[in-house]
Image 1: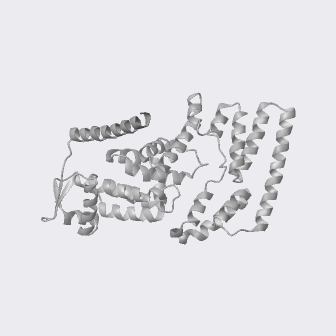
Image 2: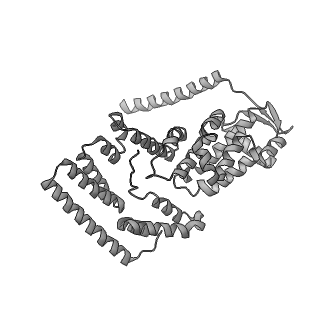
Image 3: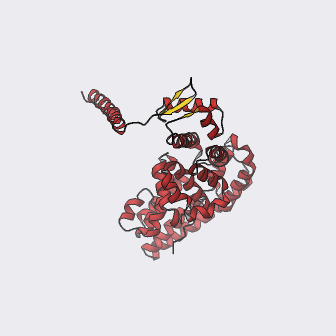
Length: 365
């Protein structure tokens, strides 16, 4: 049975804060403000309350702040007394537990500087490998290789996957989330439905069409969640079944209802939507040697002018392998040579290497 990890700190609160400081999400502000304040009160997060109040997300309430600060001080005093008692009369295990309790308290209330220092101290005094993995994520991979258990290995995949997505390494991040799909237990990070939704969104872009059916569309975990998030079913199935007009509608809906409001995905929304459009155009064009702009626009449910503008931009950037015959209104596909592509790649990488060597020689000599 997987060990339950308490969500410390409450990672739902930064999402509510993101919503509140985003002017474009004004329709969600009332609920986000309520949820954020309730979460802060529940964990008595005085330091975090001061932070969000200074950012203008919440109206400062001096009485509330004073009350929470008093509670924080009393709890910290109890924890310090417990630690002192453990150091005088008990062993390493009890001292470690007292240090972790103190560190978790500072983490829970949002005292970042105090929490980081306390967690580092707890790590130094913690003997068990499993507990060291829980405390120190940056070194968790090395600790796991030394003997981490099955549950922590799977949790680490989720942690790493979310980090990869946050820095736009979507292929690597999507693969990690997909590997953890059937064994997900990291509920301290996100809910199960949100995890499955994120896995679908990222892998819809990065998986090949044959793998899309095998690993996503027919996956029991995905099938169980899609009725609750129907827009993701529309996105997946219309892309796979080549219903491109419906796919474009689903993509636009997903952008407004899920991508832009997400703290994790919002910075990557334009990139994601653009790449999904390129994927759909490429998938259709691969089936034909040529087709008219009119039939192409009809397939995607948009105007001829829109398709012409989009294709022109993607062709100029080397993202689509086709040409537009504007006189006859025809798009002709061009099959790139693999050898030529490899040659171009070697030339480009060689130029980069030579430029780096030249800059280095100037520094050295």
